Image (cartoon, rainbow, N blue to C red; front, side, top):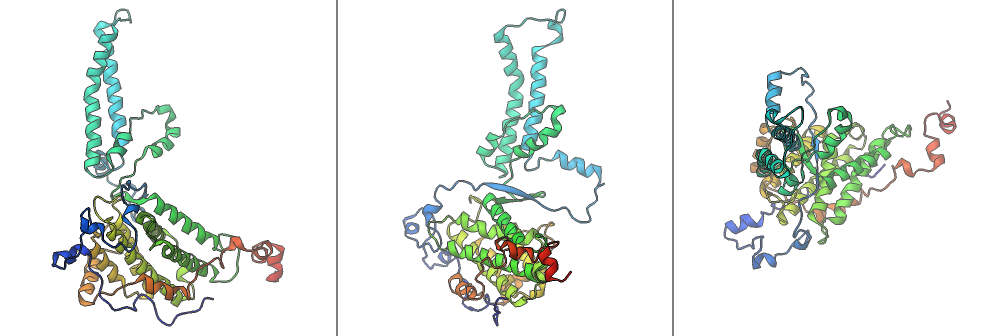
Length: 434
């Protein structure tokens, strides 16, 4: 069992939170502004050099669907469903273009085959006249397609390049089953949070999948084994420690893109939002878990500061518009899932979000953090002096007792070691005298 600290880590420093450069300059402090000016060119960057962000293309993204509410009625009002279908929802550009393409093909067919020109089922038409009729029938629908693309780009749901890349895809009704996968492939995830779900970077999703995989490697139930009651819980702690160690390894590397650094935090937060935390919460090392959560708080605030320093919070950021909802998920976990740990720094996440320009808009899909919760946390920020959460000083202290590693990784156990803990083996029966 890992040694236990006597006190949590993230509450140790009482210095005031650093105000971003933009706010200092507004008060006449003379701090250089970020941008293309000469003053900005000599600005000292703590996390990533500007060259790691220059000409950064929009991050590749994927889309996470919100889980359906538990009390959702499948037989909902049909009028409401029809209304939703009439609205242009993010991700439906492909469907709009397909519909317009079908209408265009019908119009072209009618233009080329007017009934009055048919004689005994046949007709003759010159090539030039055919091309003229095709263009005349097609143009209105081509214009409507361009208008649809423009609407999606203007709404911020995708870039102009992404919209241009989507082309009509007429499907044969006899191949509907086969084309289900094609529809998924054609789906272009919106870069904004919608009522259906929220965008995350592909790098962040990959980190989530890796974290989940590492947890499974340490889950004795998944591996069909029994070692001791809290083994799997200690395994989750180890994975979280490894994730914090990974963040520590790259956070101050100037040549590592801020997007890559954020992916670690994003992936961890997705795990906190949708992972199964029963084995972690039932683990007997409550103090060790609390210290891990405290360090996560320092990590999250550090990550927001890092993104702000590089100008990656806002509408022109190459990141998708998900910082707000990801922050809400992080708050929801710390306030509700981890409620037994009585975490006292949660309001500092709200303070950091406000300081660095992250907009927190409550979502009906994150019921644990409503407007009342945010108002209470903001009120705490007014009453309590801001604390300086310094990764460089806090993480070394944390690492002494939380080094991570692979002690609980079952896949690294010897064949003989596995056998004595695996259900149904001779070694297991002998050990437990079955």
